[in-house]
Structure formats: structure tokens, C-alpha cells
Length: 464
View 1 (cartoon, helix red, strand yellow):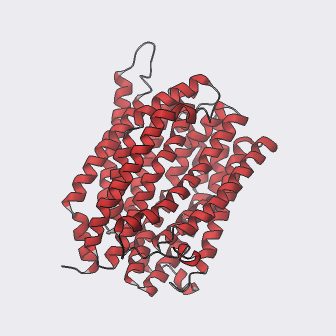
View 2 (cartoon, rainbow, N blue to C red):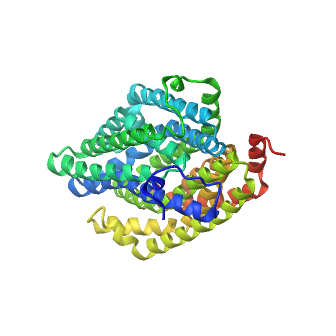
View 3 (cartoon, rainbow, N blue to C red):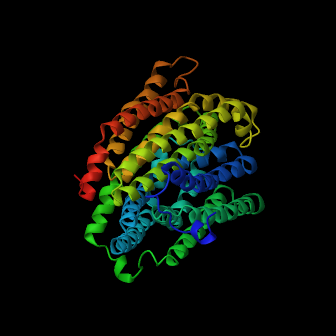
């Protein structure tokens, strides 16, 4: 039985049974990611219940835009996480210290950019996407609060990524759970109590994320037995900054491509009216929970692969990739079954409008089996990233999103237009997403088997 100190400290994933290491590391992340998803979900439930379906649609319409502008933090987080896990595995204290300091500075620059530049383009972008007049003011208010408070969101994602790179997934979980409770309390108080509406849920999210970021920072300050934290380490050292960007840029671009596709598809979604917009919001909230285990396994595989590459244990990387992927598929199969059996009850949490519940459940069933395919994609992509090959997952995402998702969505919409349905069938949004997931899994498996990640890892560690 692990002691409390061991539980809240870094985990060495270069020894022991791979599946046990992955499972122990992944479980807290699944719980943590579920808690993370509660931020947006509670926002949706509160505004849907206390303000109305249009407010629910507003929060959902704003989310793809905010996610698009978070790609900078995703890139920094992934690049830093890969380097931290590899340097921790290699026991390189100086490089580990410099990497952590560099990522803190890069994050500060990114926050300032979003706060003072991106906020000016909120309203024009919403108008460009044909956001309905009935919700555009709410969308604008929601996004501006998130942008001005982006430091909390950015630093939580970066610093929790550093903790996970060190093998500590439990601390980030505990801090996130604390912040989640705060977020829920503030949501209800600001909206139901003070009547602040959409502005209130955004403000609650910013405050809660800032608290979780502060807790992560304080935890890192207590881990100086593994790295040093000095002002000199906050300097933008060229080599470290370029390596973070090199490793993280493909993942950032991947998320940017995905988010841009979501924005483009959001424009198509908007054309179907408020009911479909609201249904899409509900589905994406449930989807967020359903996808969390896949994202968690993907992050675990990145840390696992990174530590073992740093320790020159490529044999363990392949062994863990197989075991981790099968575990992820099993969890996703269970989730798929739960969605099919109890999906309507989940939809009813967000709204009491029967028509909206039925529409959401119908669309959700289209996506259900796709979560098993995404388990394969996320797990094997995580292995490739941890080995230093962040380019291949980027190209796969580019293909499935740009070549498959967007054209199929608009193609089905165009081909199904009738006098009764001038914009086509709204199912196009979810059929295209399912198809992109399945094709992505097949292509990812093929490229994993081709083994370019092995060559990248071998060059990185100087192996033959």
C-alpha cells in the first residue's frame, strides 16, 4: 500500500508491470478530467435551468471560439509534458528545471496575447459565424470574461501538465476537485442568487480555474528535490523554447485544426436554428464526459512513453502501448453501452423541454460507437507523442478533420436539402464526426505499426 507521500509524488513508470503503471496513473486523471468537464457542464445546466434554452445555446456557441484560442496553451502543455517526462526518466535535473521555468514564461506571453489582442475580435467573429441575434450578446459577454481571465485557465493546464509529466496525476486531481466544488457553488450563487446570467457562469469558471492554477504552482514549489526553481530558469533559453515549440506546435496545430473545424461546423449548426444549437450543446457536454477516459489514456501513454524513452526502454513502450490501448477500448465500450441505455436520462438533466431531450438523444446515439474508435486513436497517438513524434498525429488529425469531417458535413447537408428542409438534415453534423473518428482510428493504427515513432525515439536517445 502506497504511503500518502508516495501517492502525492512523482511516479516512476520505467519499472513494474506496464498495465498497472498506466492504470494507476490514468485513474486519477479520468476522475480529474471528469471534474474538468463539470466546469462547462455545470455552466450549461445552470443557465439552461435558470435562464433558458437560448442562454444554453449561447454558452455552447461560444465554446468552440474559446477552445480555438486555447491552442497556444495546448501546444506549450504538450511540448513541456513530453520534455518533462523524458528528462525525469533520464534523471536530468538541470534540463528539467530549465524546461519548467521556460514553460511558465511562455504561458505568461500567451496569456497577455489573448487578453489584449484576441478580445477585440470576439463580436466580429460571432457575427461572421451568423450567430443568431437572440444569443449574440450573451455569447460576447461569456467570451470576454473568459478571455480577460485566461491566465487561470492557461496556467492550470500548463502546470497540471508538468505535474503529470513528473508522474503525479493525483495532486492535480485533488486541486481540480476543490476548484470544481467552488465553481459549482459560485455558478448557483451568481446565476440563481444574483441573477448575473451567462456573465456569472463565465466569472465562476475563471475564479475556480485560477484557484486550481495557484494550488498546482504551490505544489510544484514543494517538489524541489526533483528540480530547481530560480529566476534564471524563467529566462527564455533558446534551445528549450524551440524544443517546446517543436514538440508542442504539432499538437497545438492539431487542436487548432479541430477547433477551426468546430467553428466552421458551428456555422452550419447555427443555420438549423436554436433547437439544434441547444441540442448540439447538450450532446457536446455529454460527449465531453464520454471522451474523458480516452483523453486520459492518451495523456497517460504520452507520459509512459516519454519516461521509458528517456530511460532507453523502447521494449516497454511497445508493451505498454498494447496493454494501454486494450484498457482504453474496454472502458469506451462500457461508456457506449451506458449512452445507449441511459442517454435520454442524461439529456433530461440539461432541459425539461421534451422535444429537445428527444432530439439530443437521437443525435447522441449516432456518435456512441465512435468512442471505441477514439480509444485507439488517443492511446496510440499518445505513444507517438511521448516518443517525440508529434508530427504524425498532427497529419492524421488534419486529414480526418479537413478532408473528412467538414466536407462530409456540408456535403450531406447539401444533398439532403428539400423544400421542408432548406438547409438539409441536421444529422450531417454527427454522421460526419462519427466517420472522421472511425477513419482516424484506422489510419492511426496503420502509422503506429509502420513505426516512425520508433525511429524518432531512437534518434532522440542516440540508440542504434
